[in-house]
Image 1 (cartoon, rainbow, N blue to C red):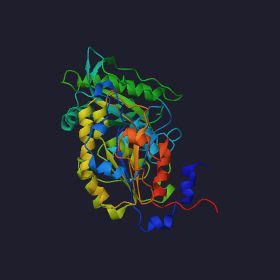
Image 2 (cartoon, helix red, strand yellow):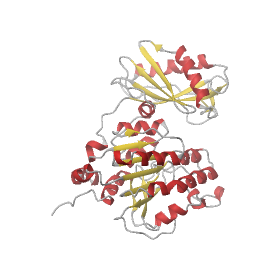
Image 3 (cartoon, rainbow, N blue to C red):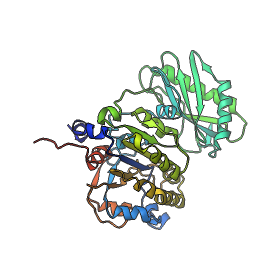
Image 4 (cartoon, helix red, strand yellow):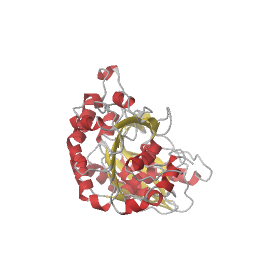
Length: 409
């Protein structure tokens, strides 16, 4: 029995039911970074002006978390599952399902969901921009709506599309005989040709055939119309069967996130999805507006990860500073336990997700104080929480909120 299983047994459900304890998990996506010659050996956390985070760090416990395991670079799905108290090596949710559910698509058993990008293709099938220049959502949505008119069915499979944000959208394939185990058509790097979907599991041959046909028909339908002239398909997946956070820990849980994938993941583990504005301050205000309705709030900030993937050190600094400026809003509500961290590291010098451990700050009346002067990667290395797998953050958050009974006599 590990700490998660013990926490499920020891959680004080009656005390939670009285609504006395409020827990916040504030996730700055892709927060962690590395020192490198390209950034003069400093990280965005070190360069950011963060008086509120630093003051909080001095009276909190610090450490670093590992999303999956040592040396393993996680996708956003597994990384968030760990933060929510699931072992991402055992509980897996496909990216297609996350994207589709996150933008409000209804999935049925037997459906196959795909995460999709609008992209720019040249010379027949070479992907020169996997994000089609990050078009405005309205521009991309019109192209996806046009594609839906052209491709509504392949063989006996219905094709359902829905635009997301910017270049992202989701597709649901609905019909008999569809199974998981289909490889991506996305080459995952620019200036590489589109890939052919391959059946990776027995029984996925039909699904692979449909995905390849959809890829071909999309190229034909979108040809010659500016930067959005192709699509990339990835993360083919079906609905999983997992226990939600409410069932496991007795918490009334809510998610405040603007990007579909994270809303989808939160929904699949039983969180209510709260509508919010696009800014950090608006997200924090949404939390305060619904303060009495929930015990646990997951608040997601996307900008840090996007800046990291773009290799934009200064923009990552700017997003961190925006969080710091609005942080007093959450602190003023006096949550019983507050964890500030990232789902994974997205170092600007790499412009990719990475395996590096993620900074963590834990604040509560019970956390103790490491008395470190700043919230940075280096200071977190000296924190009393040490380095641990992110799946154990949930029992630690519950313990710091005073919600776990003693184990044994």
